Image (cartoon, rainbow, N blue to C red):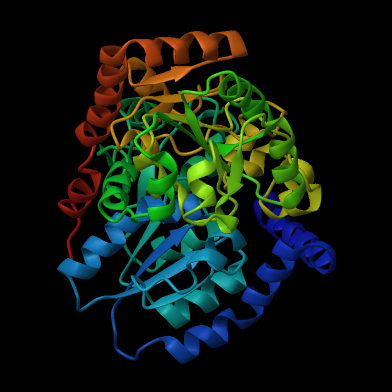
Length: 445
């Protein structure tokens, strides 16, 4: 079968590139110890609820559900698995789960071994995770399995004339909780009706993040009651636009949290700046007051930093190329398997970029939750929240410096416009919260 052959080839590819690439190497090390880790940490006679997330973004979507179940049903234990090193390495010490580990590759032998050890009482797969052998075996064992925060598009393989095998994979789910009515209609056309529209659990998560936001005294000193523009997860094409505007507008301060914080990229940013700057890791109470630009050269602060801005810019909307093809292969790009199989992997959004393999815009909701307008580049159409933010008049897309300049000039000159658009953004987030409770209300524990 093509699927199983693809998994075998994928496993081989990861082993081949592991000696030369950090992420595949970490993945392999995690896979070598996963069964022993489970044997050591699983509690005898405990009932485990299994959550699987491809990477960090999907984990954040599932996190509100994990934490509500843990609070409401403390007798259950939580097992959390990741496919990607970028998820596991960041959250391997997550206290909301009793066990965190990699998910062994979706080969029949691995699947049986994993499920024999864990024997979960139910399973939740977040968003795009459709591992055929795991889902087949869960179904055979009559273990309830749910897909949460799923979203479906007409171009996916499930809806193609040749997609019968993959449609059967979806039938293994006891229930599919989708983000929108369009997804439900697509599924109904192929005879899948155990579907409920609940929305996206990410809205619940960003509201949690807002409540947990850190106080950052150095950022507060930097801002000093000045109009501040926060650029999050930016790439070079984004930076070319907003840095030019910043250089010409001394009344505005700028915080840049680039997506890539390696030294070469930071040097590129600094070369473009014509006003005083300071890097966050080198800032103190004295030099941060003198700076007009604060460069965030570390991870973990961006979601808290948005609270200090009046306007946010979210990077990624101009598309960027993949940097290391070997590392990208680990995430399942068609270099290894071809597009039919890859529709089932974390890389679905890369495939739908129609050959550019550019990442899309990053998390607009983390900024919008603070009630500030959100700006992003022109490649936003595949991201439902960006489309809806535009419709709610809380988000704006720009494709050139001229468009960004016109928009920012209006925001700086028209206080009521700035306030209204920010309110629209915040209302959009709060108005779409509640998916977590809707899911929990339909599951029998």
